[in-house]
Amino acid sequence: MTANGAGPAICVRGLTKDYGRGRGIFDVSLKVGAGEVLGFLGPNGAGKTVTMRHLMGFVRSQRGTAEILGHDCFRERPRVQARLGYLPGENACMQEMTARAFLDLMAGMRGLHDRSRMRELADAFELDLGARIGGMSKGNRQKVAIVAAFMARPDVLLLDEPTSGLDPLMQERFLDVVAEERARGAAILLSSHIFEEVGRACDRVAFIRAGRVVMACSMDEVRSMRGRGYSVEFSSARERSRWELAHGVDPAEGDARGVELRDVRDVNALIRELSSYDVAAVTSREQTIEELFLHLYEGFESSRQS
Amino acid sequence: MTLPLFKRELRSCLFPTAIIAAVVALYAGVIIGMYDPALGESLALMRDAMPELFAAFGMADQGTTLLEFMVNYLYGFLLVALPLVLVAVLTSRLVVRHIERGSISYLLAQPVSRTRLMLSQTGVLVFCLVLLAAVLTVFELACAHAMFPGELDASDLIVANAATFCLWLFLSGVCWAGACALSNVSAARWAGVALCALFVLVQMLSGVGDELSWLADATPLALFDPLGVASGGMGALAGATVLGVSGAVLFALGTIAFARRDLSV
Image 1 (spheres, each protein chain N blue to C red):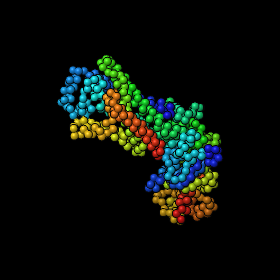
Image 2: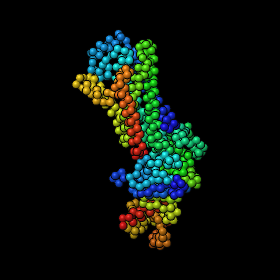
Image 3: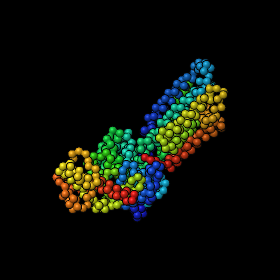
């Protein structure tokens, strides 16, 4: 969805910003369409926030382009911002103001007269609009930032670590709001290092590491790759050591009898193998999104090195 | 200019402006109160005893009229240093603090260009300086009228204060350009203020001895001559104009630098 309504709402091509000593982003490309949520996943310092800063027009790229709704993010910033909601990674609302005064200021600068969505969101997140931001907990300050980002019903949302500081109940509400916005047709880029959050909220995911997008795929693809994890409890620590030695692992110290097996694809082979050991119990569970991503990433790294 | 931001920032800047205005008014009242021929003689005695010290603070000559007396004792140092303190505080509040705390990211997330944002912030600073000049002028006129009716020509004082305002504009421009252009927060906060303080110190040094008198022309403060402007001197008028225009140019350069720079917030 460009300014004319065709093409992706967020389009990043070959974006590069080199801060030296390996810091920055290198040849990052992303696309997010209308009504789509792209999870932007990676460890701290991987380049998620730097990419967001380019999309916000805070910094100028050295190479490549960052466009939102067909407008260059740096040169045409006001046109981009008019249709954009932003939730910064570092919460820095003006602390001396009350939540209402701050949100009124943001709405006033935006020329937003309809404050119904602001009240709706404040109610949904149980936010006390009369409280001074400086006296709020981290979670409540995050709620103020969330209301500021969503209150104008923007076409594009950039959310940088959005659930930071929120309790589990409010995290659920936040994910509901994201789902509402997606259903409305907003294009959403959600940066996070929380795998489960991305797994629940997003249609697609891009994994960034050391400033480079190392993997991008749909969540359906991710789910289809999801294996199972098994906890095996042997009858004794000695039996566990025997199993570990057979798998080329140094036996662990202590009396623990259990081992964790991740990403098991061939269950029959596992059962056959365990039949030659004295096993007390076997429990199975679905592989967590985090385990899956780490597994996929490790696979990518080893294929790159070979 | 963006009105909601202008109003909000003005509210946060009025308190420091009121404090400096009160201190400036206090000094103005005290100095005008000292315009007494008898006390003038004792001041002359003090000045004769410590000529270098008085000269350093721009008080070399008592003058013959109330305006000359005021300019000598008030405009040489106090009306330069105190407004500079205000400019430092306001520049920090309006630019540096937003970048330091990261709240600039919320301002930049609104559909307002960086240039418009900075014009709005500039507007707040200039408005506060206009307020300071207005309070000063009204208070000086009221004090002079109450204590020495007919001694002070209102139009001369207004012109002298307009020239002083041009100097404040210049000092503000220096601080503003530094705050907008420098990426290091400490440098952004202090570089302009330090440069202006250096101008004031050099100006003070120039008054303490003949060997250093050449320093008087070495800083932009040499262009500041309120008495010359009040008496209609073309050179003084041109100096004040240069100060005012330079201030505006520095504001513009700072705003341009801010619009182009990277903001890692």
